[in-house]
Length: 204
Image (tube, rainbow, N blue to C red; front, side):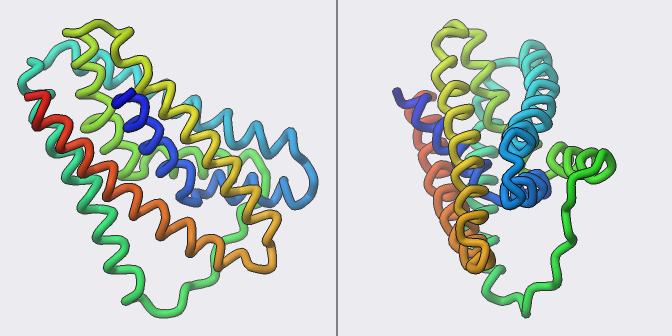
């Protein structure tokens, strides 16, 4: 249950933060193209995660479990620190610049997928959070860590659909919804990062 809740929290954080893929899906949802919106929210992120999962899986087969244990400390600190930094930095910024219009095309979808794959949060999650969990599965059995990834999938896709639906439903209050999602995601990121550090401390 502990791993499931941690995975769920991580997934919700990833799903709440608006990305270019979310914005493309948002335009499709406002046009009532529901199937396209669902495919955009599911297809490219699944492809990115599958590739990162393979990289993390094989990488953590090679390094000692003790190294993976200390790497997970770094991941927890990075998550909590990144969330705190964004909460501290965002109010200091001036008026937001006009956003790029993310319309559905092969080019915009490819760019949005690359942005998703190259985001620092994606790398931190797979190499410093999910990776050490995979290493734990190497010792205790992969069935032990399955709840973490099930929770991550439920949290991510559930939060993605909910956040995009809320932004589409409240189109007039789009910026306010995005601000709320931003603060909610980063507060949750700090909480999950601290819980991850605490778990590793007692596991060690």
